[in-house]
Image (cartoon, rainbow, N blue to C red; front, side):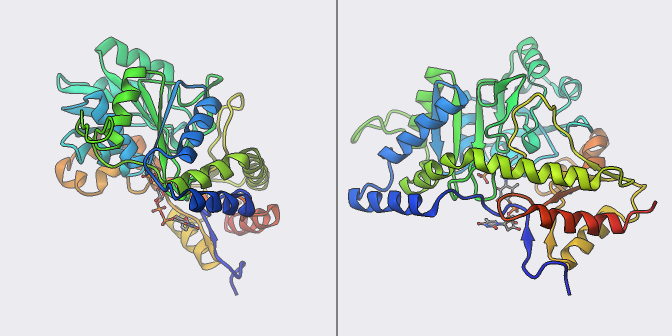
Length: 374
Ligand code: T4K
């Protein structure tokens, strides 16, 4: 018998109050206004801009399209420097538009882009840097801004994991030229599918709004190239409902994170990724690194947990540079990415969120502890 009757997933959606959401859906039905800059999307954009403290929030249909729109609006071309240790949407948003993603290594303790590695990757073709606040842990925003300024590069953040997190006490969303959140179902804050581009740049925001809606500036008046990146009203209704539950979701995640840390403290070879205690965070990811001193290899631990119905994940293995099309395009990339390869081989992400109780955490931690070599 597995330890859990029902599978415990990483990425189980966190949801706000069902009745509130359904009431909003009823209003949308009554209005029969389902998309195209509707009132619920506008309200969500306003609420997010206020929460983050930015001038503009452009809601989009998903984070990937958000990245693509931001990349285009900034006019990036040639080469853009990105981490390889990220979800594959990060480099895809560039490659899909004929831009070469150039992979730079991460800092092995923070899992975010190493500014020194970024400097080494700059060539005459480089136009931008696209760091990721992986696991909601802020990238080195000051140093990356310094590199961007020195070389005249645009800085665009993939903030897919970092909604409601801070860097140096400032909310993530206000750094670089723009930042892009993902509101996918599995994210800390979700709109079923969705995302948002946030920026303090008025002109850039205007361009991105046009691009999101085929370049329409009014009936029959197309003034820009564009795509369909709009968020629907029903997604925005989910967003408003989940925003109302945000503090509660953080509290549940924080509680689970603390329980995992306490229960796994001192297990040889098991390290829980820490964040800077002075920053605001959403605690969405419980990230373990499995070292040599642990009794099992990382993949064996994942298999063991799966047998017990704990569907832990080895994000973002094996690193984007070892996925297609990048593996064929840059067969030697790994030589410059030792930390990426090491971290990708060691990480396990454990289930958390509203579907996981402190008792569940105890059971999962017991399963992990039981196999450690003491
Ligand atoms: N940049 C970064 C750094 C990202 O992490 C992402 C997305 C993006 C950009 C792009 O943003 P989006 O375009 O997606 O908005 C998931 C998500 O599909 C993806 O959004 C996310 N990153 C990535 C890290 O994770 P998978 O491959 O893990 O999805 P899947 O289907 O295996 O689901 C994960 C677990 O969640 C499952 O065990 C079951 C559970 N789940 C999932 C869904 C969709 C549920 O319980 N309910 C659900 O509705 O990719």
